[in-house]
Length: 388
Image 1 (spheres, rainbow, N blue to C red):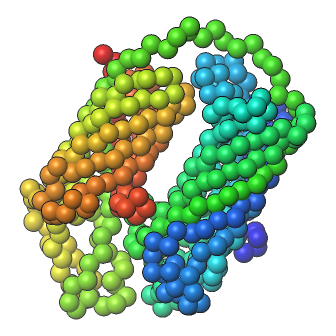
Image 2 (cartoon, helix red, strand yellow; image 1 turned 45 degrees about the vertical axis):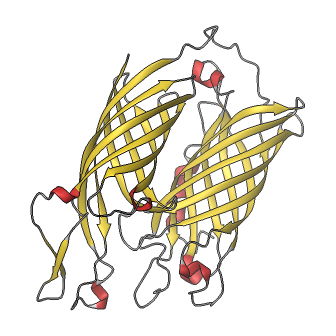
Image 3 (tube, one colour; image 1 turned 180 degrees about the vertical axis):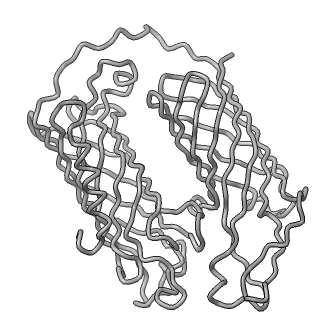
């Protein structure tokens, strides 16, 4: 495997370097998954060199993790979750077109509740980088419009069950959704989404010890939070004007986008917040005129500020908190979008990760997508937070 994807040697060294997690021997989890690729692109439905749908795949994973000590409030509130790092190899159909990707990622797994005292229901997440894709090439790989970069972001969200088999062994059964995308950093970028069912075995060299838990408040007191954030980013669009050479048609142009937003949310529990927000942003590539230069390159005709590039949106938002980190889910509807009148084209799904630098200041990266699968841009946010 590593001889096929040389970059993975570096990634493996990074993972192995994290084995001494907080001074205790790490646990090891080995997992095999079987799954189905969601056929959202013609390439996956049969427009490929094999001439058949590309559906089934297998993955092999190794994770190095530990149970948190349970000495801090957030660890106890989340049921002493497992945290660590993992490495996954994806055995995909038509590797000559898709490649043989390997993902390295941060891993999190926490309990939802228990059944019959022994069986525990969990939720899990993996966030990292996948590399080793065969990227789109007009001559060598013209059908695969899923990726135009050799590396992409990797996200996995799962729900499953675990059953202890003894003092050191545990077995897992998980159902999950995987997503790969470069965030529209380079086009084409249809991305790849897949469902999988996995079976895993977990070995811990030490027993999960009972530790004194910190004193927790008797009851959680909900409170209201506000956040004002600024964001910026880029998106890449493709254009096909008359006279543009075929070799230039997938280069596209990169456009900046920027804006601000205001969010009011209610911290319902230690783990969760619900809220709503208002955003205003300027999308410089929303209504762009282009021309072809005498040398055959694409050029943007910049009209300066254009009112049709303004966007105003509203969105509900859900936040899942993990100490200083938080996962963001937003569904934004554009009240103002002069470039389209179609209702579904105004609907964006946004998923992100936020980090609290301090009680007031936070940083976040958010992916904006349509159709729940096609990433269009990445927002980098700086937020100012306060309570009321």
